[in-house]
Length: 317
Image (cartoon, rainbow, N blue to C red):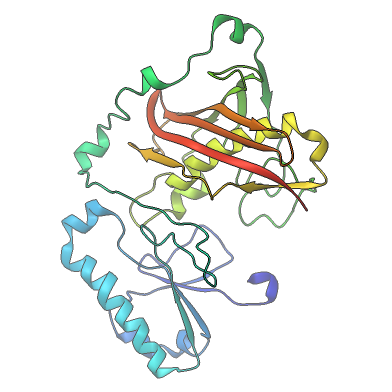
């Protein structure tokens, strides 16, 4: 939006941002007074409503405040539309709202199951029970011939970095979104099916942008970025196998086959190291290069994510 010359105004009860690309104002949307603040209201033509109390611990501790933010706050924004009928509003949600339907075709649908965890439970997370027995352990022979790789810094180095390093259409993400620092173990013919095993690592930096960008008073690594780190390992294997397609094809996430994942823990600024593992379960070379994998994510040695049957196709650009 900035590249289109738009001014982005953020209103938030904290009144602060991890980026200087947004003009922030300290506003409690549950209060109606701000609806008459012409320094904000007269400049708005589109509203992207992202506000909600999404942290279940805080919601349990402050139920009335949660209702104020989620219900009264949304109602106040709707009242703004009455005052300025030419303003458009997009309400952004999460959880069950994965289903998108352009025309009559369902692009992606999902089912999500959540549990409530107290602060005490989160501070003593036990991870995925039995994961140590399910995770693949490379053989001695595989470890002897395993390769490794350290990624070089490539711009953009952070989300607001204006510099962009040129790259082919098939490439690993630049620093701003790359969720692994290095490949520690790569065996192209390893794993349960002999199709590939890979393990990557990332040192936890408490100043990472995504901690600040997560929900209010909940500075953890978003679960989607944990999945992203696993997918990046799968991309690394695909790039190694089909590097001759680097300028002619792009990655397409496979969404027409069932896949699922489990979260049983969080990555917090206090953690030290993230490890991600992927085992390739299926490869198709022709007519469409395709790869599927299962995997796990660990934080400080504790298995907290499990991913099954995720895959990519390589499609012509």
